[in-house]
Image (cartoon, rainbow, N blue to C red):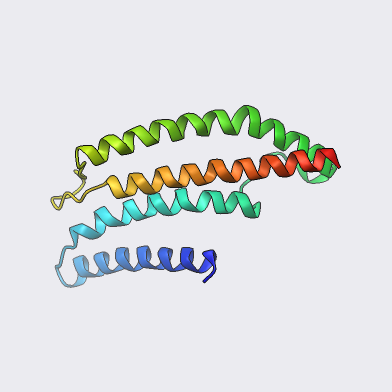
Length: 152
C-alpha cells in the first residue's frame, strides 16, 4: 500500500471521529470526550509525519515568485543555502527539544487536560518527534540532491 493511501485513510479516520462526535452530541445527546482528545492528537501526528513526505514530493510552499524562472543550478544553490543555514539549525534544535520533552512525557505518563477522559499524550509526542526525525532525514536527502546538481 502506498504512503498516500495510508495518509488518506488516516485523515478519513480523523474526519469520521470528529463527525461522529458532532452528530452524537447534537442529535443524540451523546458526548464522546475521547474523540476530542484523540482527534487533535492524531491531527498533530498527521501534520508532522506528512511534512517529510511533502518535502520529498516538492509539494511544500515556495514563497519566492522568481524561483520558478531560475535555472536548476541556481535553484539548487538557493536550496542548499536554505537547508544548511535555515532548515537544519532550526529543525535540529526543535528535534532535540522534542526528544527530551517526549522522554519526560513518557516518564511522567503525561495526560491531556482538555477533557475529563485525560488520555495519555505521550504517543502523540512520539509521533511528533518521529516526524521531526523523518523531516531531518529528508532534508539530508534534499541537500544531497542539491550538491549533486551543483556538481554536474
